[in-house]
Amino acid sequence: MENRKETQQSLKLFIVLSKAYRAISEYTNHFVQQNGLNPTEFAVLELLYHKGDQPLQQIGGKILLASGSITYVVDKLEGKGLMRRIACPSDRRVTYGQITENGKSFIESFFPGHEERIHELMSVLTEEEKETAIELIKKIGVNVKKMNH
Image (cartoon, rainbow, N blue to C red; front, side):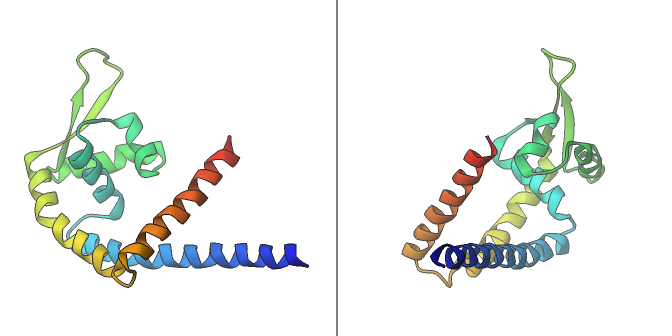
């Protein structure tokens, strides 16, 4: 009987995490879309801004996007003048994504508001509760990775 109760708790936790993630995503994505980007475009631009030039082939894995969709997203960001493709000088098979000055300006004007909105969402928790939540959610993520290997 105890095992069934634990299983029910696990399912409840899964549902609560899923609903919270969906609510957070919808809230933050709305702000991104109001500023002229879709959430995937923003994720690519934010990655390039914070991590520098990235091989296009690796961007999908870093932002959880199917590799076939990267070309479409990069095309849209290039069309908006926010990023460009750069050929790798040492390996012609590799193309890098690079944020443009316009892309940097966009992120620098947009990101403080985005960051503040996320902080407002999380402000319902104390600093200690945030630390506990981070540790516990990381623990779940690490366990999932172990189970996949």
